[in-house]
Amino acid sequence: MGAWGVGPFDCDTAADFAAGVRKASDTEARQDILLMAMRSLVQATDLTLHSMADYELESDVERAVAAVAFIADAIRERSHWTDTSFARGCKDTPPYDLLDPVDIGTVTDVLWISAMAVLDKVAHLLAADDSTGELSADAYRKVLAELREDLRHREPSDQ
Image 1 (cartoon, rainbow, N blue to C red):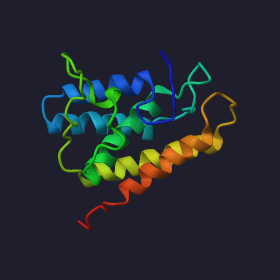
Image 2 (spheres, one colour):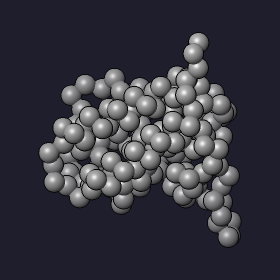
Image 3 (cartoon, helix red, strand yellow):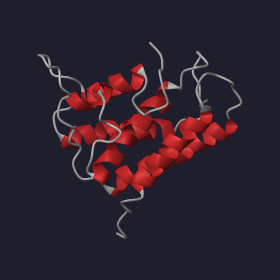
Image 4 (cartoon, one colour):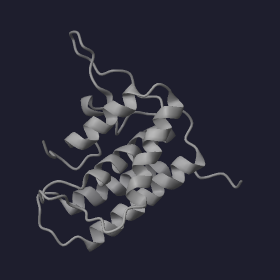
């Protein structure tokens, strides 16, 4: 249980979330899961960055940032953020290679806008955070900035 780094999938909650995304029946269901995770965070009130254990991020934050990582990789057409066993899972037989990347389909405007809103909300939570837990705020800010840069490779349509 807990977190072991600042990457989007460096915690049990995000790894479990990724398993749910992988197991979804199709791309539409995967997009629904991503959107629900992001909306849950963006619409939350009275949310703090950390959970009861000071070194863990709030589970809503962990799931939403993991959702953003899936979207960022889809936009960039790569598996940079999701190229871990926690995000992709492993085959059941030797040599236990990673499963294929998860297909979330085309990134819609709603997904893109929601992902940017998550990054804004987490940045706000970081600014308000006064804890001195094990989470490295500077390292986490760097991850969020890199995710934002990946998202900027796609702009919402003008429709």
